[in-house]
Image 1 (cartoon, rainbow, N blue to C red):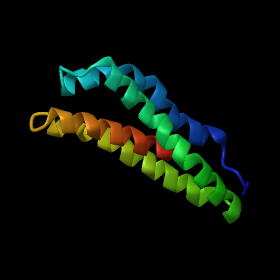
Image 2: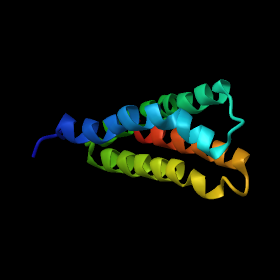
Image 3: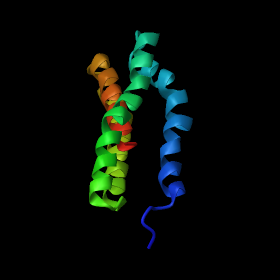
Image 4: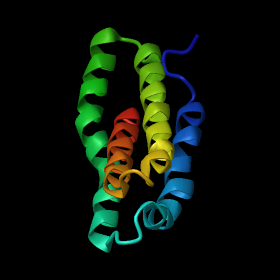
Length: 117
């Protein structure tokens, strides 16, 4: 068994974040709150990179200390899915609180970015 898993199995599920989520982020934010502005779009888009910035050194250190990447890889995939689910479910609260729905999107993007760590 190889020490490092195939890069395709790791990168393929993560590429949807750039090919599907980023182009659809602005229409989704407008759907959640018609009064949203471009500044918030930038904030929401940057949330992914911020989460990745926080998690990458931690996951890298953990993988190095552990000597194996299997468990960190599985955990980051789970965290990424959880963040994407949070992002997708933000629409459930848009009728109650559009502002809360927008912040749920940002938190979901941050968690999703942490999953890319």
